[in-house]
Image (cartoon, rainbow over all chains, first blue to last red; front, side, top):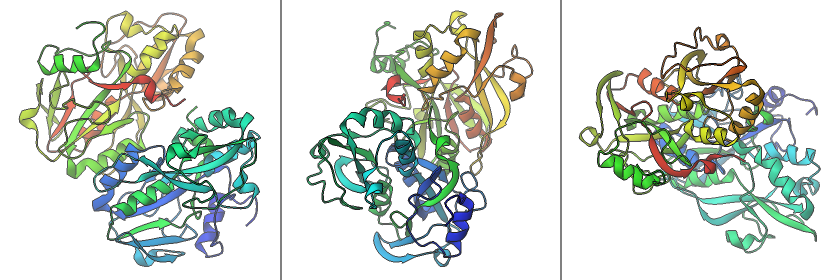
Length: 261
Length: 261
C-alpha cells in the first residue's frame, strides 16, 4: 500500500483481495469503523443499544435494510467486500472467517458502522503522547470490565475498554485531546487502578496483546468498540456478521469531522 | 410553582393537571425534552432519522415498546401524563390537543425524548449573553430552512432552526458556550444572513414569535428540535403523539451531564 493512499484506493485494494491484514495505520486521517450486520428484525433493538451506550458504541452510519453502500461516510464503497476480513456468527458462535460476504448477503441485512479509537490515536500522537502498542507493534490491550452497559431488548454486554499506558505528566493532556472526539469514544472512562473496573491483571487482556507499562506511567482506559460485537452476539442472532478484530472498515470521513469542538 | 421545585415535583404538579402551560424557565438546570411517540413498526426508521441528523434530533432517551417510564433520564416519571400538553396526530393531521394520553396509549408505542435548546440557554445567560425571546416574554423564533435533513425510510424533513439575536461582540462567545452542548443541538448551524438558509423574513417565523433585533446584533441560528416533529409527521403515521410546542418533558438529567467537555 502506498503511504499516501486514499481511503477509496485502500478499499479498492481490499476489494481485490490484496490486503487481508489489520488496517491500523492506514489512511490515518480518516475514521475507521467497527462493523456489525444483523437482520432487520433486530435492527431497532440493536440501534437502541448503541444509542443508550454511546461511549463504547458511537454510531457513524447505519445503512437501510439491504443497503451495502455507506452513502454518508463512504459513497461508492461496498460493505460486503471492502473490509479485509469478516467473521460470520450463527446463533452467537463463530461459523467462518472470510475476506468477503457476498455469499451470505440478503436484502434484510442492516449494517452498523461504529466508531473506533484509531480516530483519536493520531491526535494523541500529534500531541506528543506515545502509544505503547504502536511502539511495540502490537494490538491494543482490551479488557472486559465489571460495568454493565444499559441493555436494550435482547442485547446486553459488559463495557469493554482499551488501555494505553500514559506518562504521568501527560495524563491530563490525554484526557483533553480525546475529549474532543466525543463521537468516537471520547474521554477516558477511567484513569489508574484497573481493579476499579474489575480488571485483575493488566498483563492478561481479554482481547489484543499485553503491552509494557513503564515506571512513571499510568494506565488509562477508554470505552472500546469491541463492546458492540459482544452485545450483538449476546442476542444469539440466527446470523450476525462483524469485522475481524483490527480489520476495520475505512471511511472517507476525516477524524476531525467527528470532533465535537 | 415554587422557583426551587425539582423536576420530580414539577412533573407531579403537571400530572395532577395543575400546570398546563409552557415549561420554559422551569427547573432551568435540568434538560427538557421534545417528545415523539410512534408505533413500534416505525421505530427503527425514526430512530435512524434521529441518528442521521443528530444536530436537530439529539436522542436523550428512547423507551422500549410499550414503556412509559423513562428509566434513564427520569425514573418514576410517566410519559403519558407528565407533559403539560400533548398533540395527537392521525395520518399527519392534528386530531386533538390534550393534557394526558392514557386513553390513546397501547403496548406497541415507542417514545422518543429528544434534546431541547433550553439546555444551552441557561449557559448563554450565565455567560452574560442576553436571550431576546426571554427578555420579551415570547417563544423563540423558529424557521423552516432550505436545508434537507438526511432522510431515513419514510421520514424526511427540512432542517428547522431557532434564531437568537446576539450582540456582535458576543457571537464568538455564543459559539464557544453552545459548542459544549453538542448532545443538545450544540454549536450554531449558521451566523448572519438568514437568506443563506432560505429564510426570507426574520419577522415572520414559521413557529414561535418574532423578536426584536437591535442594531449591532447578529442573527445566530441553531438546529431546532421541531425538526423531529416535522419528520415524524412526514411519514404520515396512522398515529403519532408529540408534545405541544413549548410544553416539554422535564427530565432529571442536569444539562451539564449532556455537555461533551
